[in-house]
Image (cartoon, rainbow, N blue to C red; front, top):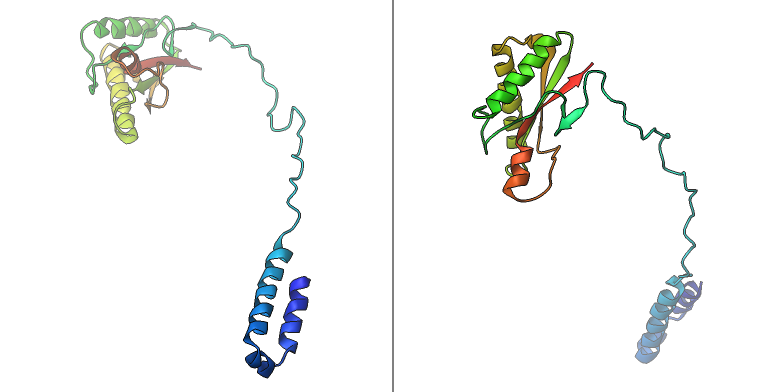
Length: 190
């Protein structure tokens, strides 16, 4: 309001009066800007924070009890027991060495349970780009599926998915952690 008043006074003064007394003109300009600055300052006291009830923002209540799968429980990694995960060398989708025995055990279990459906989940360690790891995880899952089908498991009961580096078991930055994350899990689905 003060600024508006000063502006009105400023325009009331004649232009020729301003030419006669430049210091008066400078004074009014200064007073005008000071008035604008002062009138622009409002109440700076902080408003109290809105309090929320302890249950605001929470979803529906869920049970913390985990239901055990009807066939078996998780035993290693995210693999449903009695099956075992298959681990891979760095940057590879080849199943070899002692991992062959694991795939054969999984095949024996699946051939004895013809109604069981399994999702093979390909996983990677966090090295490499997200896109590369998703592709490598898919190749690992497909490699495990192909091996099981070659051993006589019904391929119609097997699905694959790649998690890439999205579902790490260990978050360390060492070879042990990375080796645990380079795997294919066999998860029983109903």
